[in-house]
Amino acid sequence: MVTKAAVLCGGKGTRLKPHTNNRQKTMIPVGGKGRPLLEYVVRLLVYNGVTEITLLTGYLSEQVERHFTDGSKFGARITYSKDSGSTGGSALALMNAIEGGRIGRFDSLVVYYGDILSALNVRDLVAKHKRTSAALTLVLSKDYRVPVGVAQVERDRVVRFEEKPKLPMSITVGGLVISKDCVPILREVTSSGGADIMTHFVPAVIGSGLKVVPFYIEGFWYDVGTTEAYEKLESDFVNDNLGFLD
Image 1 (cartoon, one colour):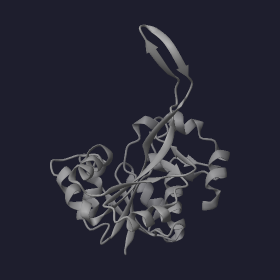
Image 2 (cartoon, helix red, strand yellow):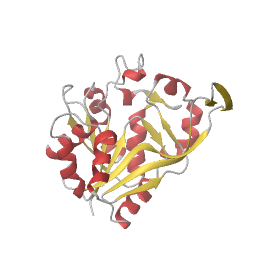
Image 3 (cartoon, one colour):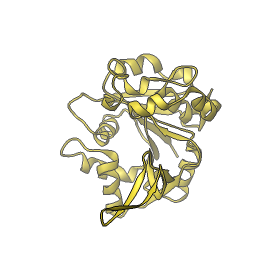
């Protein structure tokens, strides 16, 4: 059974300006050692035994390629699939990498968003995907804490208020595993142009009747996708939660 990974790292990072004015968003430094955000993703995959990695690049792709080269210094075999700025959409970037032969043959493909820091147990994720014979396994988190206060309003009166409550729902954490059975659906949703993995592809797989299962992450994860989130990310927080990747 061949397991590979594809990491989305081609976006312009408009929500991270001014930090991305001259830097690929996944190459912004994090943690006490100032490593690029994307390096933590690559190290996480390798730590979990996934060493064949394709980086789906675009904006400022040369920064990514210059840092990671062939991946050997990280214990990986890294290839690149570069999209032009005119294509658009994470699903299309993934489809282009598959059809362009940049990923090659796989039984299970871990798809990970390059602006998410986490201590995701990728081994267990892939193991569940295989054990359940799923077409797609979606990484989720329970009890999402809303970053703002939430008010309940009845008849023009605020009757209840809670600051940053946890909501009893399952939310996506920027990761999934797909099997080969999903490729025809990916091809279909991208046939007319740009399409998004979470917005278009995942619902299409569910709608097709193929088996989609959840995998709940336990412990640390952090979306670094906005300027506010990035500037709140403390070095000690990264070191304490991802020190095992050193």
